[in-house]
Amino acid sequence: MKILWICGLPFEVQEQVLGGKDHGAYAAWSWIMGHLPPPPGVELHIACRTSRHTEYRQIEYRGATFHLVPVRSRARVFFLFHFDWRYFRDLAQRLQPDVIHGWGTEDCYANTALRLAPKNHLIQIQGCINACRARSQMHWVTRFSAISERRDLARARYVVAENDYSLSCATPYIRTDSLHIVEHPLRAEFLDAPPADGNAKQVLYVGVTEERKGIWDALAAFQAAAPADWKMNIVGTSRAHNLAELKRRLTAPELTSRVTHHRHLPANRIVELMQASSVFLLPTWVDTGPTTLKEAMTMGLWPVCFDNTGPAHYLRKFQFGTLARDLDRADLTEKLKQVFVTQPWREPAQCAKIESTIRSHFRRERIWDDLQKLYRHIIAASS
Image (cartoon, rainbow, N blue to C red; front, side):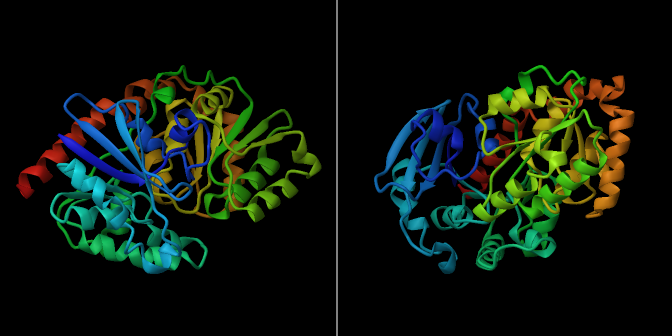
């Protein structure tokens, strides 16, 4: 079975294989790396758009073949990514894959899969731009991505999402009846490392430092609720004005010695931070299924989130974590205070869930079984 994925370039590949030179990676794409290596019988090719270099490049990494595809068109979003598929056309014709899987509707990935494989494509819902715009203010340019997303979902023959919420938020734009849910696997670093021991007096936030991810709510709640001997680590970056605002807020006397900001860390360093933390604070305003939330749960951190969208789905699914009223900062602060007092992550019943329920749900082998069944269904239907 030969499969071609269309997605962004993961930071890990840029750092580990390309020597850290900027090839246009802008995100961890950790769910892509969590799938590697693929199982026996699957020849996996991963085509990643790069805007920094003009030459095609092919590399082998962790059992998959990565193809760096230069996409040099300007103002792509204003053309709804309509022409980007042409940059991947030669590669698809050379590989002749059984299925082309487009990872995400917010860029060219879905559109490219649709154009290159009208019958044997799979469109993955990553983050639903239309749902995000409805709940949180975003840059005006995203209106073009939202139009592109609605168009691509309406044309898709096969659609897959990681959870019920992710699928439901995109359903109004989908016309096909072939809808599927296949979870994202987590990287082995988080599934195999010993979880936190529950003794650390530290809160962790991992995510872009933007309002929609709840960074300002998280800081305010920590400042008001955390005992004096608790500290906080923030991992994430964003646009320059958001980073400047974060830096300004961290100069407050009550935060400057208690909060540390890391712009970007590799997986092994995030594992270390999770092992040295007890609470995971991510009061996002809207999210389909934050990978960092899943990673934190597998490491035994107690999540505290707003009661909305993807985070609420996972906290209720595993009955693991605390939900505050949606977008209610005062309730978030009060719930966080209670968590510091009751320390629910120490309860034996909650500790038992980490290996028996949470980690098993996100293991690569189980998820590849589901994914292969779906691929075989698409291949049989298109032959």
